[in-house]
Amino acid sequence: MNRRLLVIEDDRDTLANLCDILELDGYAVTGVDSLAKAARLNWADYSVILLDRKLPDGTADEILPQIRRRAPRAAVIVITGYADLQSTISAIRAGAADYLLKPIQPELLQATVERSIRIQRMETQLVQSERLAAIGQMMAVLTHESRNILNRGNAALEMLEMDLEGTPAALEYIARIKKSHNDLTRLHEEVRNYAAPIELECADWDLASLWRQTWANLLKSSCQGNGAELREAVDGVDLKCEVDGFRLDQVFHNLFENSLAACRGPARIEVACCDDELGGKPALRIVVRDNGPGLKAEDAQRIFMPFYTTKPKGTGLGLAIVSRILEAHGGAIFAQSSPGGGAEFVLTLPRSQKSVGDEQTLRSHGAAAVGCR
Image (cartoon, rainbow, N blue to C red):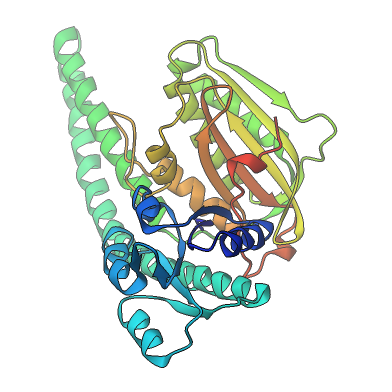
């Protein structure tokens, strides 16, 4: 879940205190002291906006409708020193998610922000579950019927190949049709796999053995692997985690394949690991970075959304599936441009599935927190 917060408060001391409290709780906080400065920001980048009710250049009642239009998914928490019932009702009617009175107690602030994020996460999961259920039902029927049609078409093409043996030009056209059939089958399978429930079969795995095997298999099947090199920075790190090996193979396959496609010259892909924590439990952080062109800020924010792709060809489901697999393990993933150039994918996996609970708060650490270099 996005843990970026925006605080709009005209009192400099209060603003500094709020930012300090929230940053210590693991949030990435932007603080401004006027609506004019806030207007220069993209409000949709923030999951929670803490808004002082009375500012030098406007009031919460005036600005709330604009925030709802520009950032409909953000939770707005109005803060004020005026404890009147009418202002509370007005703020809630205008779209505020909650209301805090000054002086703000740190514990109450933290609980209110965390509750807002938890509600957002539950709403997102509900919408996603409904969407996946609909896609899954549709694709089950579509894939079944399409597979039968494509199988009949491929059988006819094979018979035609035998009749046209010795005519290279005609056989080339048949090969192209077969490839189109295979591409369509792969598209159906990708959508079906994305929509299907993820059921894990976890065991203790050395993750290095997984990604090395994935890399070897990928180079055998990819023409993009010429001169490609996989580097590791894992000295002294315990690489054992309780994971589903098949699913993690899918994760590494998608990440490596994307890097190979993005790098214009020989790909240099590095996997770096370090110890971490997730929800207060032991975890492993895995950073996969490449020497490609990197990611635009907009792409980094949206790259795990279903059907969003930066490639001229592709379904935009590969990284969405990666994100779902990490979430199923109780982990998290985010993307950014590496400080040294290229793209960087940061995965955090719990060491043990015993520590993963339904209500565990997943913290996607910001760029400044990345320690696996």
